[in-house]
View (cartoon, rainbow, N blue to C red):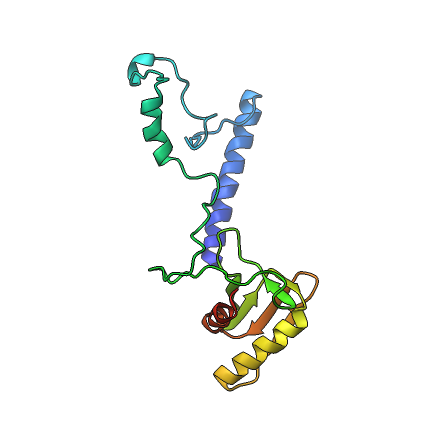
Length: 187
């Protein structure tokens, strides 16, 4: 490290001496010997001058041709999934419970997925199961979920409840168990 510092100091001092000597001799500002060009932005790219280099195109207003383009565009709205009770190959189940059936309700995400997530932090050492989008009596939901998880795992659980946000965090990876419980309840 010290050798690198000495090397850089000697190179830097030579550059400074050379530029000041040139400035004193010519009474002009120092000249930069090499400028690296990066062609990463449109401002530094060459100007478009000749049309012969580029392929020809024509604008079409034919609706039959536009049908091929619309098939390639992504949908602007998430399509509504089938809500009848049937087994799908992906394992996805539609919600069957209506709001008001229980004193609490867990909404699905905009893609109709259950709002249960796994957070892995501290280089994989901390795992937390997060349940979001909870409305209603969050304390009763937490007690029912904690009873179910302690019965399934056989150990005590650390729980953090954020009532204002509508979120429950369990210490550990219980995503599959929570999703199974939510499926049994109809969420």
